[in-house]
Image (cartoon, rainbow, N blue to C red; front, top):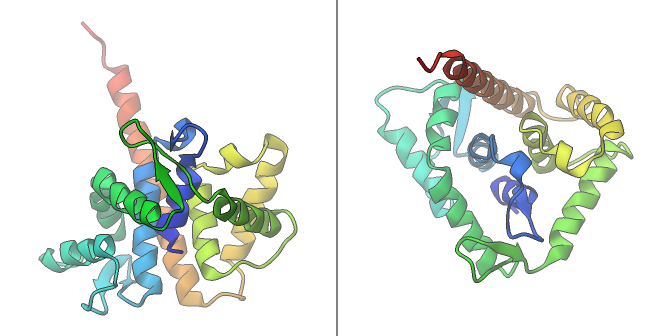
Length: 220
């Protein structure tokens, strides 16, 4: 399963058929980061000096990922990772719908009667994913690189607040930090993940500052 598909599953409240309210503020950034990581793990792009570059122009086999390659190819010059994540995040609605439909076609999700409501068609898949996450952060199991990417995105986008009670959250953050600096993983892979996380953090801070500035402007 793609990182972007796993991320959407973690965003989704399977009981209500919509995104968890706690995940809405950063859902676009998390999905943008997940799709870029999907392309990296498939050898389609890499990051050099915090700028993204295409390594392979062939189709990835996933239409929504190929659209990102097209956007990047049309750029007149290499873009900074922060700029690239921000641009991709603007198309969250379109990209997320591609993924929802793909998961529905696989029977993993079921589309509800209400528009854009999706429920778990195979709840065992998300349950297995949650079980793997708990084994990593609580039982110190070493995850595969895809799961490490997912965990890193969940951390920066505060999704762990949905799945872990307060007393476990500090342990979760420490465990992910430990994994991101572990020699168990290839240095280049850790470099890519860390730079994507840092770029998302910068964008989140910028959004908060912009919101605070607007709130501080007097009405009259």
